[in-house]
Length: 291
Length: 169
Image (spheres, rainbow over the protein chains, first blue to last red):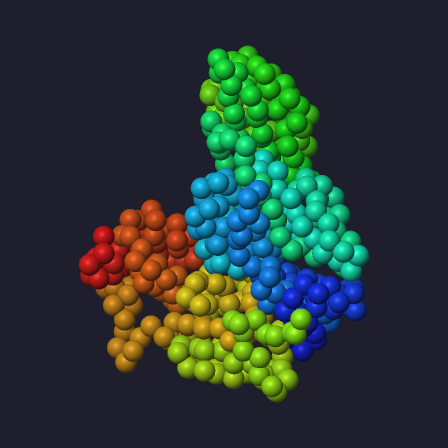
């Protein structure tokens, strides 16, 4: 079974108003940006006889804009643009790094941040970085505009809270209050390119007087239906010195923050162990083998 | 506000017709908008150098350059390239093979050949952008192009050789 081009209807709005109007008129239309996911399903013949709302000509949704508060990334910005953007690399390096490890050069050149978010894969590699940067997602629909904290966007595996006619316009990245003392992005997979992550992690750490943890933001992907912040581990370490014992306790607490599963890519046990080791090494403690 | 087409697209008056610059020549296409770029190149324009491998954007065999950047032509509907520039493997040789293609021959960087057009274009995007002869960097750039014959050594050798011939390092 293959995709049949003649069975498809393509709508090509050029601005947000037109996109919203067309989406209201065609509520079952499939939004299309870079196509790196949608076209795979289409090639398999799973999306024939559908209407496609191709958002790729909406100029207002492209590029990265700098504001006083941070960066506003258009939903059509590609992973390659974010990977190479000097301001993203300077202020949000974990996002640039995540984008450099998504798929391959070919995928980075086409896949968009908005498409990545709307797709809501549990293995979305940009999500842990966006989660520690506390990104906000701006959307538009016939009911108007709204802003969602990144963690509130996802409702489950490949599910978002977006209403049927709602589209992502941009992702806002607020500048960090100060430069973190340490940061990490790690993607763990079979192979760097093309392999879907077994686990992905992003972390920011600010230290206070005497080496006490002032703030820790630690986020994990591919180990729960949606991206997670390690809230209990973060809260436990805040105000403490990251001694070997404290880090061990925080690593134990990670189990309550995530819910990894066994699947064809990895096992729950391995995923939890690897997440704990990323936290350990991030906080300067030695890693540990499987129990 | 008056609607106008985005500057990077060419909207022709006749419905369903679009113009793409393929290998430096303007080509017009009047078929279904959702036909894949690879199929338009091969079936409508007769450019069969572009090969289909996996059909899901994983193997890189179908790589072409879109506005100079490597993309998988099997996962792009042709309507999205309206008004843009596409380069296929046919653009590399100008009566005789390009230096990159000659290096591939000299280093035996192809065996069955199905991945070769895609690898040549991804490699060319690296070489022409002034990419370094660093083997790891070349491997990273080429990591979305799978080859099941060569083991990649000879491919990397050929790219390094081309860069050095051009005076790069």
